[in-house]
Amino acid sequence: MRSIDKATNLSYHLPDRHSIFLVRYSLFTRSHLVTEMTQHIDKFDLEDRLVSFSVSITDIAESLPDTRLGSHIAGQLLRAGTSPASNYGEAQGAESRRDFIHKMKISLKELREVYVWLKIVRRKNLINGIEIEKLINENNELISIFVASIATAQRNMRALGISNNEQGIKK
Image (cartoon, rainbow, N blue to C red; front, side, top):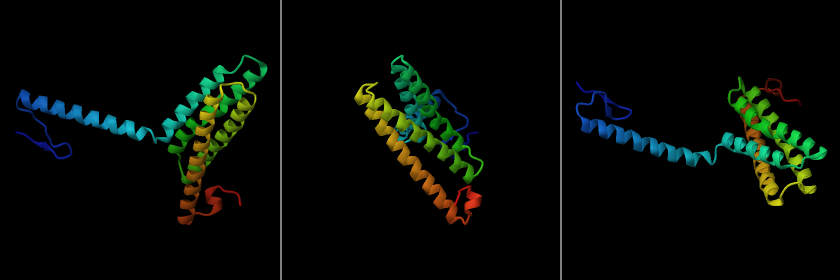
């Protein structure tokens, strides 16, 4: 007896080798299509952007000169520059809207700190200007995304009638 899975339109029991080939081919092309779609979506995936940003920060930190200043800035960049990705991950698993906003604000705060450290690196000419400019631009874009996301989350909370105290926002 054959049954058809309505979601995939494939049969549960395959009577011959030809059908097995078709199912395997169908699954391959579907997974290939999903991979292509995922690669396209990844360009806009905030978590992936934050991870890439963190990796770039580690590269910059590693390439700073081995001086007192270079070591100090490298340490600060590593702490502040790698934290937004993990804090964003925590925000995705937030226990409440208030918790989500709080974790997003922590990420934003760290991104703003990184911005200042990158400006110091640029002014001191510690790294190639093109590399640092690209990173500063990405940092600015990420800051803008977080500012907009936080504002939207707060606006949505107000629309639901949740007070400032329940939001955890100081007046």
